[in-house]
Length: 575
Image (cartoon, rainbow, N blue to C red; front, side, top):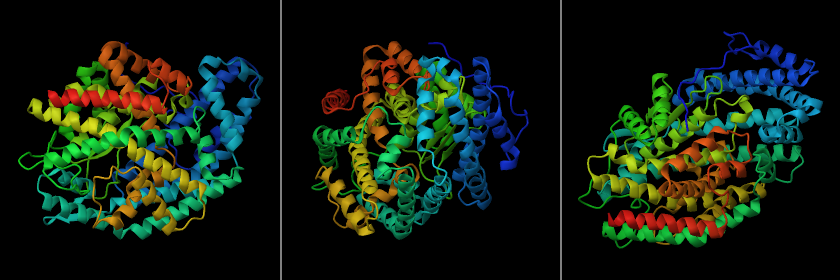
């Protein structure tokens, strides 16, 4: 499949070429014009949609840059203020206009003449947005956006002192791979103690978010925020009951495999009992893998790996490097986590992460690189809304890229043995992540269907769910207080509620993509690129069909795919 990373921003025809969003007054006239324009022909509707898309792209890119700059430096109050200004002064003013414009589209007699093969998902989302809109929720949603960002601010200040050196929690976590068990315990104790220092602050923040989100749901006519959020996220292809079936299947088919892997590690470490600081450790005499020394080396090697898989993939990362669209190294004052942020007008996305030189960082780079490729491939679509694809396909793009690139990871290591160890870690992660996804998702279902619960009730339910998916071969004694609050390290709970089951659905899809890749490499990559190029012009199930796999997370499918991964691990272990 032919594609090019030579993206250029679409020339502006509606807004002035040098327009810069400064305040609401600067952009309001464009919303007014779209709201009041007469649409008297199908061609006029097409032009109106094009102008709306241009406006959305310009505003969207401005908002993205405000968030990027703030997360890159949480210590600069001016950057936080710029983001807050957009959320409190600009975005709330846009929402009534967005509602009126959406209504205008749905009321147009020419909307029915749009090509349903391309426009169906878009029009369905517009109808959904209109149905959910409540003016009284505008201020609440603005407050929620501001509060959610405080999670990154709080975590950005978290550091620990290890052997006399101040480190971020991400940098310290690298030491949990060390063979020295005394050091690992010291690091784990320091990190868990530091997180517990902000336990009450994070609980207070979360309680405020819960109350506001519940209020939004009630305003929109829902009994709880879970049901509201399913609708808002456009989950047209599955239900809460499907999620419950996923939880049960993971418990039945994945947790036993995870237990087997942990037992393998226990024997390799020569321990009688695993502690939580042992689960990533290397045996004595084997140094932890260091696939790169810094962000520059990580990027250089990633471009090489992506290029070997397909030259276009490497060109995407190279284009981002040339435009300064990456911030990869961990440092004090930087928000936690990692993301790829699509920039809808220019088309060239931004990758943010906290690399400290570990295999997990290598995996994150492959993951975010997959997201970036998705941004490049979908940029050519005519409307910005068509590039706002569901997370279940977005995460398929990223997780598949992790597995596709496995065979080329030798560029990060000096020996075949090191490369195999890294590949094993990735497959371990594929297995380990599914129970954690089930835990976080099941916890969220409880959180939002039990409004008004206390902190003590929340801790108790978290512990019950965590134990339900426990393998039983990790001893948490001495760290029970930390275990009770382990959920607080998951930023999605604070910043993007209910965005997590998508990782599980997509992880299964990625395993299926990898199985397809093993059978027919070029066809699988062609299917992958075709699906990503479609953006959101097809339904979720149609996108998975284009990718050559099933949209399926039933118990039988989970059992089938877990067996495939187990087989691949056995082959890797024999190599």
